[in-house]
Length: 466
Image (tube, rainbow, N blue to C red; front, top):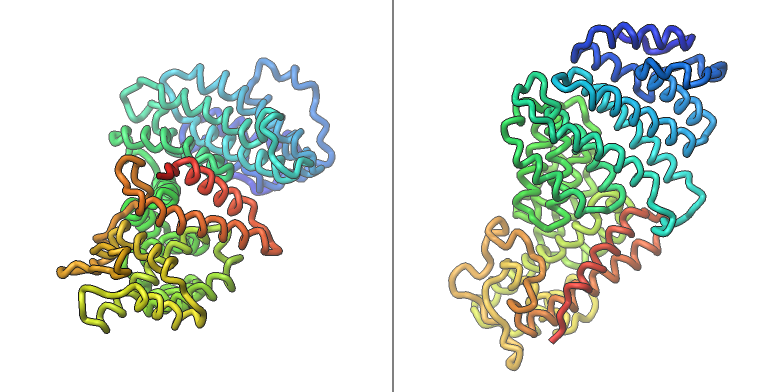
């Protein structure tokens, strides 16, 4: 057992030496706990590190000393200084242990913790930086520095050619992938995630060697990436795996997973039970589910405005997409009432007006219908000249699980001009409205704003106006 507190640095060092001497995975796991940021080092206020060069022949001692120096700097709120110590700590461990131990991997848990510590300190350094906004001319954020150091370790592990799972460093790739995911997601660098996912997909032989905890974390992040890409089938698969395999005792983690999984399920036509929402304190979804089921567009808009701050750090932008499901259900009711496959657009506009208590222009409704047709949520076409929607005689409103899983813009050559204008109008307006709504809130979520702007930039770049 690793003590939870240490009164002297010598006790801390002695405990680490005993664990390292074992040269075993279990010993490394104990060192991992020892290097945790939560360990109570009571000697920090009285700690005066000797010349670090004195420990040159003992790289492990130097790593421990640098880590303690980082803890001391954090205690003094010197975050950039702490980052420098943690970067040096990881570099020394990489050169003297990770690279030199060719046919061993018992030390990987120590590497995991060092990378986790580095990410945490980099987050704190970025958070408390004097610069209010990131400046690319300054050479990158502190998180980017941490990512570069961790990526170097990742490449060493992934390039290990040892076949035996007992000694290969490749078994450490998933944990490092998750750490890099956390960094790239925090910086909204979604493109950097793709090669990491591709590498894991090619490592099927290692899947049984990865821990359940790492696989749950990995599937959670891949599910979020799929959600970002509007690939709801993959998002459903990955987030469902993460939720099912996350132990019941981790209630907070299961709740976070559900925050993303529930909207995906709703989008695919599966409504959550109230018991589930109550168990995880997610009753805020109850009125959303009711509004979507009834097709009450006005109620949906009011609920989203009232609860924007609750959803903003997680999936606010994606929840806005559920508005299309709300429109789909409303228009289906219009179809059932009319009981005819040719319906004037003004009928749909009248239905929207009833839910919103304000006028709905036929142009806006026609734009919405175009998006529903393109997304596969409605089968038919629009006669613009006659202002009539001609619905398919066979299943005009297919089940949501059967609709297009990635309602993104098609290529410029593949989409007609009228479809381009309709989608551009709706999506651009939605993105701009989301940006304005986010900025107007008192508690601004920086990552949410950045996420909106990234999507908006990518979207505008893809437009090819006729």
